[in-house]
Length: 241
Image (cartoon, rainbow, N blue to C red; front, top):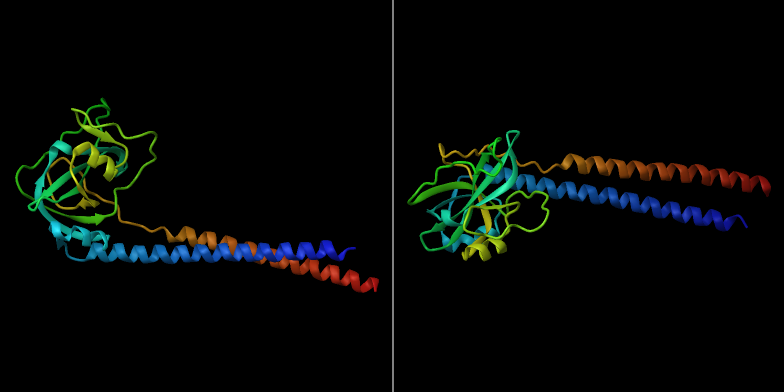
């Protein structure tokens, strides 16, 4: 009569051990993936900028992150401010402006950060908008950093566009422009009223190692308890016989 509950407990313990070990291994795999991503970012930050023309846009998308150099003209009529951003501990906005290359291709450029006016949150920062052809150096990435978004982006109107997050499809609908599916985080340029103290990318692998240690520790605890109670049950059974 006692064997069935004992076997059920033993099987449940084995299942719990297998699950916790599996979760620990999954965290280690995630850490390996993050390390590979960190290495890719480190390489991109250290390599010289690659000149990019319109014909290269699709190829860049397959090599992100990548340091690039673009030449073109900013289309200020369709720039977008990204709200609820921070830099150097200050609240403000990011300015994203489309850059039209000589062959007509359009790439979005995150030009940098501007502080909010503490006296009037509705007032947008004053920045310089260079006319004519410009050279933009920066790091090409899949998208801008995202923030928690409540609701949809406001539709484009006659005034400045302020969004919470940048969405390529929404931008194309609002502007009528076809854009590359990557954005350049600009690193060159000065004296235009924008900050470009971009934080260094960190993959955050330590948390995955920490989670893995917790799962493996739990597996070890379950193993120890199973062995302890299993041996005690065997001793009791041997006394009875």
